[in-house]
Amino acid sequence: MLLTLNRQPSTDTCTMGTLSVNGTFFCHTLEPPVRPLGKYGEGKVPGQTAIPAGTYTVRVTYSPHFQRNLPLLMHVPFFFGIRIHCGNTVKDSAGCILVGEQGKREESLSNSRTTEFCLTQRLLRAQLMKENIIIQINGYDAV
Image (tube, rainbow, N blue to C red; front, side, top):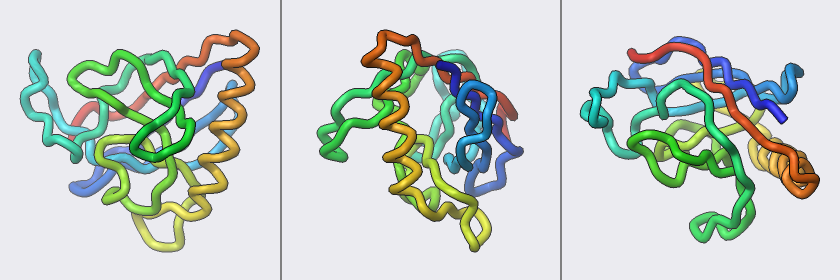
């Protein structure tokens, strides 16, 4: 299964985007701003920086923090514990990818819990069928 996240250019406060599953639009996304990262991760603001564009393996695992199964991005350079989960504003992110519908307010998402649940169930079914799950994050490298 291929997830494709296409980012829009970051603002000073966030990065909006769209998420497709196997080439079909699934939902909107919200992340912290993309910041330029040095060779050793310098430039990262903990909890306030989007992960680097690239290709990552995804596994659905139990999150002790959220107390439920959620998609986890594996081997993200300079980042640990990056999940795909629900949230309405970038304040809910801490560096993770939020999913939902385009919110009525600028730089926000709505219907996020339902979107997270539907995506997680779809990924969990693929994982149980031993299907590889990959996310390709495209877009802009820095503000």
